[in-house]
Length: 184
Ligand SMILES: [Mg+2]
Image: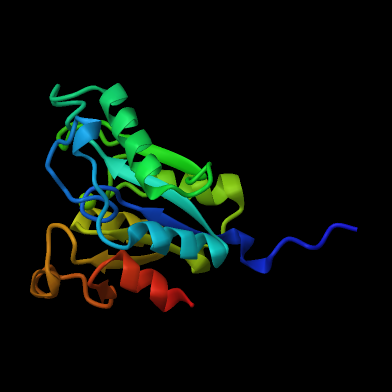
């Protein structure tokens, strides 16, 4: 008889890319420019050990702006996964929101649409889901989806910046590494 699935199977982390997993190089289009922030590969491995499904949720308005193509984004993501080096598939699903800030929002954060669709599709428990990111739009996407949100200081804001950003009650961690360590 097969063992029962782990009770943690409905947990998930929704992860921003630029400024959270890799340095934010602003409109990164070349896979050769992809590098990992320190410790994230081990942290993502630990999150999976803890039973968290991983989702990548990235705004890439550079596509709408004509700076690069969706294929460029895919190639950068492939390079990032190579560098992380964990068994595939690393991510249960990936959302690349290509619209610009002035376009009608489809999936662009702070829209919660991708998170809400993923919760429904994969039977996730919102009480055990987190949106992790370096910008207000990440935090607001998580809050709009009524999951937990956590801010990291590896991108747009340092701790003082987050204190001024007006997201009271949202935990702030130095990086994704310390956040994952706090999970267990
Ligand atoms: Mg970011």
